[in-house]
Image 1 (cartoon, rainbow, N blue to C red):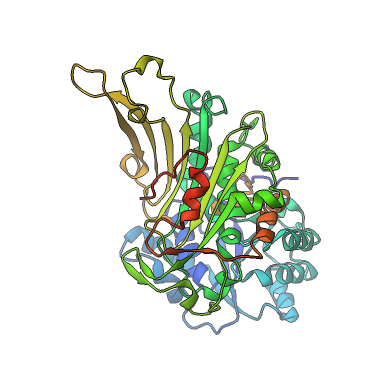
Image 2: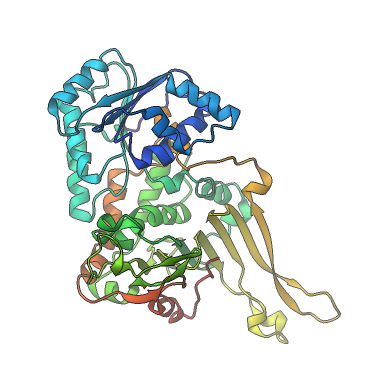
Length: 491
């Protein structure tokens, strides 16, 4: 059963208490606090949201600590933050302290709606949920009880299934909000509006007209201080079953009957079910990996991945992954989907490229085929959110000479975007009970099921080196070029 909205979208979220486990950490300081303040400024969260910071450390000016990434010179932000600090409490306790959850239950005995946000390491997800269950804090007698879980949701199929089982033993699926901050970005949400709100696009959105699809998530940053986490994870596990597959699902899904959360999630799940699980041989052939060496990326000198703090000197963990997938559905059969993600690359660029099939050349016998590039729709997720359509036009002059041109739309040119973290929509939707942008248990498990053969194939062998600041390893270029195609340049 889906979580039910308690108010209409656009109205202030209902009164609630938000308990943030690990609320003094980096995630809460950099992203959650600014998002909550932005929602307060915009009137989408009222004075009736209490916030409890559940953390192990002593309360040493928690309000000042959380305000580090707020622009308090902005009068509206300052006013909104003042509202939030008036309703901010600190709860000092250890996640493993059973008695602490009994104390928390006593403190919340008169609360109505309560949401628990797990801004903690993944190893704490199940223990905290189980402790909340034992303390009867997930019973929905006085109001809703919701649990927000950050990624990574498991590290393979077995662990994802185990975590789902542990959580669902304590609460209903409608209470679980598996959060993916990529889906909070305006352009990702606009994918469905662009598709289903424009008949000329939806009419072409099939294997008759689409040649292939590229999904890219490129970063200039290296692993930095996250070596311990990253060396046990890698690019594939960190990005593909969640971020990239969610974008794949939104691009490939069939039109839902409505924008009701379950209608949307059902169509996403159907799309993921249609993704072909690679065989062992296909996993070795259609998925490649790389690891960055020393270079310059994003204007900064980057040392070799293996020389990063907390990374094994002989690490075989990939910092770049690329793969080709097939969707066995009536709409997409025969259309390859190319996915790639990596760190320490030439540019920060998250985008989806829909490349259409080339035009028939009967009218352009005098033209070189290369002079008539295929049409492309480019959905830019970050850093410059927008959409672009590449098409052919005639050059001025007496000859029929074609040239590639572009129609660009950028959100910042048309709308006052303001500073956003990507969490605003997700937090607001969670408080409303709208699960449209949140993964369901079956979707999470299906994502891991698809990449499982690749994880097994990569237990042997070494990732290919690529220089920091480059576009990635040569094996990724070879992966797409053997199909007669090329990656859209990252920029």
